[in-house]
Image (spheres, rainbow, N blue to C red):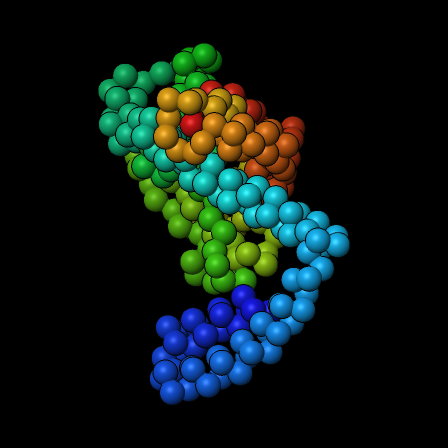
Length: 249
């Protein structure tokens, strides 16, 4: 309750622009009550009250480690990525073998070539007739507006960059959203569409300065046990190809 009162004071001052003449009396009254409860309950810490504190601290460490780890992963992907436009220009100049169908590559960086696309081209020596780089973004709003849900850009040589936006309260169904892209001029036949995704295998590296080593190992453990993005986005498993990639953080 004390933290809630402090946050209320910050919001009332920074966001609602209350004057100090209003903030100080209201905040003082709330804090007197909350600190009284806090002082009374502080006596229970030595009699079992330490357990929820330790549990809360452990959850806080895991959540902050996951957030920081994802930031490092995205930064590493962006730094090691190959620029998309020169890649497409090179494909146009030296076209590889094309196979029928549509390939959808899930990526977090719209300006770089996805690792799955590079690995598929390197090992299988082919490209699909249409290649879609798909980015899924979860907004801070509960529901995404219909006019901003789909953002499609054509890059030439049958390459497309597609961004799908969902609200945080929505159920992100990627196949269903792809079906609505026909109004944007890009139709999908799910029986002729293959999804590609890079599955990062996190390798802690003491030489890098992102996090301390024990947090690197904790993030690697969390990443191995996290719900796959494909399950979260409801991508059918029989239309999915995963290509592994080692990623040092």
